[in-house]
Length: 475
Length: 97
Image (cartoon, rainbow over all chains, first blue to last red; front, side, top):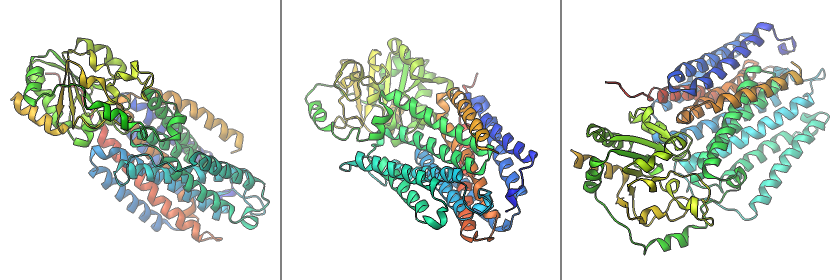
């Protein structure tokens, strides 16, 4: 029990320094110029935390520890290098699941060997406060893990993105959550938990794995930006809970930062869809309403255009605003889209990109893809900054986006997307709408009036193929 | 440290997080997620303590849990920082001719 001695001041300061470096890492992301320095601060903070821990403990197994770091680090580094930018949402979900599982393992280790963590009383029994912290840590960690695994499977296409609805799921979910909370409270009052209730800790862990799974299966693919942000938040709270157990400032500061970061991102995503957080979590969006809207779509007149028409129109234009969406990511069309934009710029056309906050499958997804394709970030604009410009634009070029342009969000109170802020593409002189076919509707299952406007030309093709054809015609 | 001091740090850090994250530009929200991912793996500290204690006093199982925890957290730390670095390197301004 070498932990029983008071922590030396320099150790506490070292953990504090690493917490501050993590704050600077996030602060750096306020602009692309400062962001890389921020990332280095983060690395330095992590190095300080790890080295301080190793130096201040009698390490009985240094070789094994270094081997574990090397194996994990190698896998992580190679994955990070090889992963395609379009697969970023899956990767982030996978990483979240690892944080969750690591939190579960740390909590279990602390439960099995509390002496090493300095959380026992004189008789060697777990301190009651630590039990609650540990119980919450293991529960949040397990929810993060199983929830992220489901999110990963949905984003990666191993599992259908459609919501899976169990009967009476709200009752089951609330019951399971109540059971977890009740058991953690009971954990606090048991005299000697390892002896009296050896099942308790593991039951909490098992129930938490189950609830994470149950919470995410009814949530549809399009709500994934909220889910990924929410799981990001949970991974932070799990780290914070374990930080309380260990009395470690670096972990507490980091947990609070990550927890608030994920919560704010979830809030931004919900606001951008005009949906409450509760309704997203309750799940099932887009499951029921598809049928009749799709049927109504078939008999309204619409105009079809070719790549040549589109190239001709855009060459004549003074200003073109491109609106990318998830379809662009699926088709991997970002590179050829940038090529198209460059050719237009050479013709003297002003080209801008407009991004809706929920375009894609995670916050900032479109921005990363455009950056990957070498689109300068000062040509890419957020909804509020560019929406008024559609009125002066000759062309709005919508590629792989749908619901985020749907005027029904403003006019039709019965629409499931009513109230969602949209990009006003309909105000442009001409709308070029790239879409695979007229049959499919967006994730919300709502028909889009923009398809049938007089000034809209539908370009029905795969997004990448269409851009390639337009590029050929521009030549 | 006593519980109240720890709680104070936690509450203050939540406020710092709130203001710092709102100042992050929306264009960098994906790197924000990957970097928060990397730093939340500071949970490796707990895994290191468990593994470092070795096989003393019934710590054999705890040691192995700790070692697996170290490996998982390391995937995240190295992967998270590397992928953030890779993304941030792609954000470029327009070249002025």
